[in-house]
Length: 180
Image 1 (cartoon, one colour):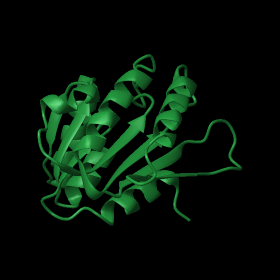
Image 2 (cartoon, helix red, strand yellow):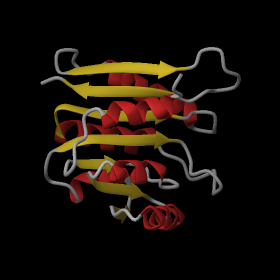
Image 3 (cartoon, helix red, strand yellow):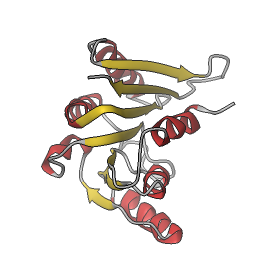
């Protein structure tokens, strides 16, 4: 059985072909950026922490892959991308092994998500890995769920995947596919 992040990768790999423009909205330690670059996609990755950019650069170099890394918040995606995208991924929460006070915020996440949904091509997908077991995490989780629950059914299919018998606050995946 796949965990939610593995499932996110599988769902994204089903639609991404070489040369597609894709976004890693929260590069973090670089795992998703490397995954997307390994699909031969043109990857643009965002993070507000220089440490995330440095870790991602190192992972890309080790894997002999490339991506455009941007030290800026994902809410500014529209300043860097002015064309359609095939996919995007978010890992909400904080950067492991770093300052746990620096977290994704509902306002900026929803701003980025709104922009990316506009850029998304028909058949494109956005994966949101929601980690909420930290201060501020519940508020962001609830805001994201309320937002995606309100997306028009005719235009978007939205699904939620995650464990139900896990202790604490297990992360879960929200997957969005653009239908029209």
